[in-house]
Image (cartoon, rainbow over all chains, first blue to last red; front, side, top):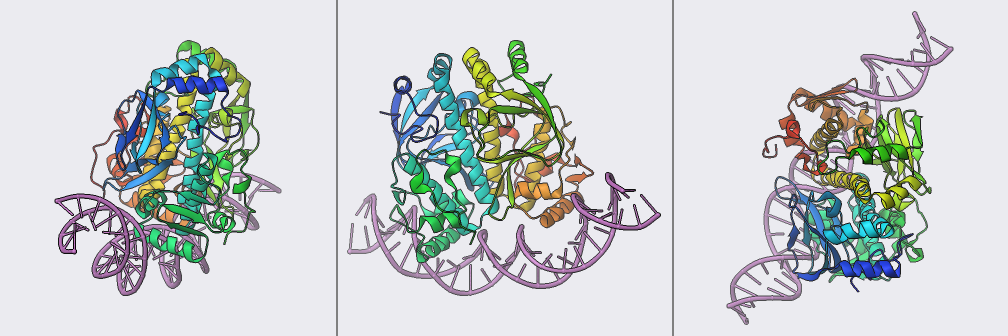
Length: 248
Length: 248
DNA sequence: GAATCATCATGATCCAGATCATGTTCGGGC
DNA sequence: GCCCGAACATGATCTGGATCATGATGATTC
């Protein structure tokens, strides 16, 4: 089942049996990629999109010095470059962070789906808009939060996304990212990420070691990062909800 | 013609005559809004989307103190909350910056279009993904550019978008934003925006006064903001192209 | 089991942009 | 023609995070 986690626990878009079957049938191939491998580069014409089955992948832009700004990370269940179907080329690079497995869906299949099944097509559209909603939360993070808030917000978001995918219990999850990755996500230096992680650890909000994140106080962490999971459109998000607390 | 500027000059999505007629027919109403009015709030269920005919509008998130981070601005021709069709509710607020005119399109019409005309539906999808591509460029801006670079990048982007819409000659355009608006867009304080604008003026890169932006040296401005218009998918973008120059 | 490389850790110094304060300019209302 | 508020302008000071430097830890390879 390639589509098991796709749009799982998202409001208003549970896949019907027949839709799931149709989507499964659209997969032409399954591929494995090593860690830190580029999958697609900005500007290349693309003819297929990929559903992430296992691993963590990233999308990023780089500046003139080659420093990266990650614009998205993807977890299992994400259709990571579905936007290449309408756009035909991408405006950014796509790469693995950890070793990953992807299911390939040719654009011709998506074309067929959009003619045959408008309702399923709308769910695919929805999936790309969920990514856009996450972009907006990242904009808020970079524009309005300080370093500690950014890391706290990111950890809460990742917890929530993995929870929706069935890969977090709401407090504890595997996440094989380095402090340098967090820096590229949060627009900080690795040095500063290191100091922030220590602070979060010392305050008992969150411990991140050996590729395992353990949130000690979700409510405090969410308050620190001004995190509210609404933008993720998660169904049954009770374990993620926190009382709103004043900032700091 | 409400749709005159919609997707104008974008690669691979020029509207066919019949598609344009269909979209025009989907408009149920035209509304005028005063400056600085909220159009929609996060979380409200929506049943229509709006095509911006005239004026500048914004989408924003606010933090616990009520400080705004703009996540998008919209210019004439933009379908500003089309993403509310698949998502049903929004994750952010929408408001006018200047007095604006919008054409209202009920979601029921978009539903009908996606069943009748998959090709037009794909173009609507494309329009929402263009917004997502702009979000990504904004992430790069906030994560990797300094204050001067952010303002330079924003001015280049706005020039390019207005150029595509036929509202800039590629160097000069009307833009009724305040320095406080620029601050909320670029994650800066108004005080600092003021200093940056003076610097750009003194260096001859760009003058912004009396709601008119005049770019003195597009190539230098683009270099300063590391701006490359590729992510806007503009067709015939020659007047916007600049030789790539090393940063600074 | 020595060498190598990625990752994590931590101290010292510096600076871009925030913050605080104080004008000035200009257009609209009465 | 004066009042008033929004927008623009500019100086003085402070600070969060960058930068530079150095070392510890731990996994992998030969």
